[in-house]
Length: 364
Image (tube, rainbow, N blue to C red; front, top):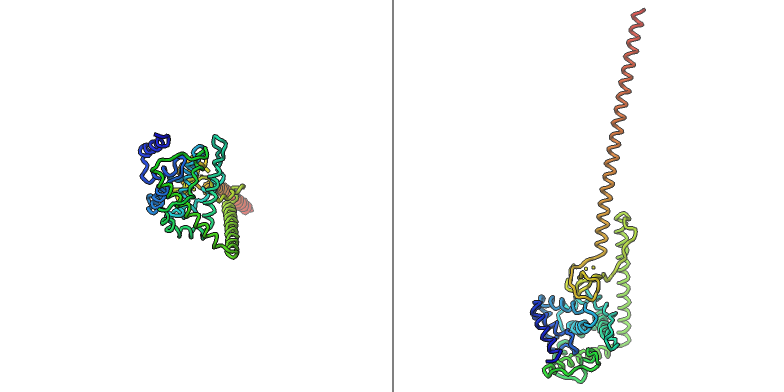
């Protein structure tokens, strides 16, 4: 039994022990540490499973864990990107929607670094794959066209090609090991898929002309202008919020379009603790650990603190106003008492004057 066969058996035991579902086990197999690429049959099964909402969530959960791996498990990351690229072409529209909404996870992998024991920069493969996916996501027309041709890709799965998945990328020695005969068909399927992708890209490039390039340049310029305008509006909104709160926070928060660490699985509610592929954060501080947590927005937390401070400030002002009102009432009461005493004194003086006047009249 080879070491990779043993690893496969151990992976099966772990799948059972940890209670992974069938589709999650398939993702784990497609993104394993074995030094060969995922089979075309397996990736196609996973891509088709994304049309089921429940399976889609489980697939993205496992892909997210693989994307957040690092170090000696760099193959997890590279194969997860390969599987993700395949699902972007062959999977459901949900894959496109969620990956585009959380593409910062892929963008962070453009800085992935790892050098193997031989001194080879294997992280370069991850960086290039992340760049390819990022470029694909930024070109809606190209992505739409390549997805449209997915039926043509499927029709080629039975054919073979001399150009296929470069498994030497995954083999630290530069030469892939001899695989078992049972994998030959899968390897041919993978080659057909890669050849179909290249053909689609070549066709797209042939259709390009100067006018099309100009339109793309204009569209890119418009998109950058829209992003800058959104950033400007967000800063103005933050400043307005700070002014509305009475300037309690003298150091306004800086807008971060890619908030630290989100969970890829959660498309609705975002902390860099760790991001998964649905915009959720994990409790770990390193971005390449596969943890799925809730979404936390630092700006919302800061705004909540400011609001609490505002409430406390209002309460303090109310207490001061009540104290001032009490002092004013006491002063008014004291003034009223003094006026009453003065009036009594005046009345007593008037009575004394009348008494003396009567005495004088009687003496006359």
